[in-house]
Image (cartoon, rainbow, N blue to C red; front, side):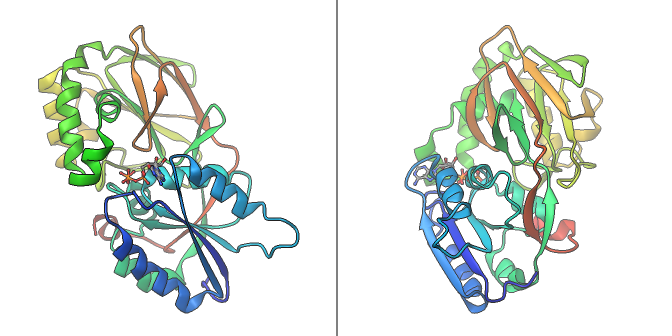
Amino acid sequence: MAIHDQRIKVIHNPVAGGRNRKRLRIALQALRKHASKVKVSPTKYAGHGIKRADKAINRKPDKIPYDIICAAGGDGTIAEVANGMRGSDCPLLVLPLGTANVFARELGLGTSMRKIAAMVETLHPKQVYPGLMGNKRFIMMVGVGIDSLSVASLETSLKRRIGGAAYVVAALKAIKRMKELELTVNVDGASYETANVIVTNGRFYGGPFTISPNAALEEPVFHVVMLHQKGLWAALRYGLALAMGRLPYLKDVTITKGTHVRIESKNALPVQADGDYVGMLPVEVRIDSFPLTVLAPRTHTSEAAES
Ligand SMILES: Nc1ncnc2c1ncn2[C@@H]1O[C@H](COP(=O)(O)OP(=O)(O)OP(=O)(O)O)[C@@H](O)[C@H]1O
């Protein structure tokens, strides 16, 4: 699907990933070369991406519809736009301007805006399956454990200033609460006791790190990654194994598949979805019956994911 004479609505989160104007400009230049119209609408507050996307999809009858909706931001922005597009088969183009940009890596787009600009005309529609928490979509993952404790104590202003390093600061704060991590996870009827869980439809986590090597966005199934140990030593070991690509192969890590997952605890614990705090336990997630159409390279390699 070449972006040729098409009408594109770009929903841009101006606060994603710190300063992102230059990266956006590179992408817009490429889009304007090929498209007949490129309309950029910045988000004004958290959650605005949902409304913007819904409005772009359901235009008044006297207005010409858009052919492509583009989410320019981090994974949180993409999730918002994907929520506003639920039920539509209009393709979503992703311009990664966030901090971790896991979804763009997962699609094989990578994170180099120059490379994306160079290939934007050759991207093809592909169907992927987001998850649902209640009636709200997440595009890749939901987590409870050291990650959700960290996200819940993350200072947004610090993240805007120092980027990914703010997560390290947040993780240090979260360490104090690690003993509370006692979870019961039910995957399609099978019950597990664990300390950390990540329910994901993708391979990557926190950027280019592999957490579930056999997952694929286009398969309507979750990979449920459970890290059973808690405590400082376990957290450090998991962090190191993740950085070295060894996490999925540790003896105290279980990965199972399912389409319906319930997570609960006797303790009050926060939940993260696509890197943002979304509420407290208990939580129930399932695969969305509506697929999401995204533009992606026809074939992709791990090199693109690592760029
Ligand atoms: N104008 C805005 N002002 C404040 N917050 C916003 C605005 N627009 C969107 N947001 C919120 O910012 C949050 C974070 O943005 P996003 O996830 O896109 O970037 P990021 O956190 O830098 O990247 P990543 O998720 O890849 O780490 C989103 O969940 C969204 O709700």
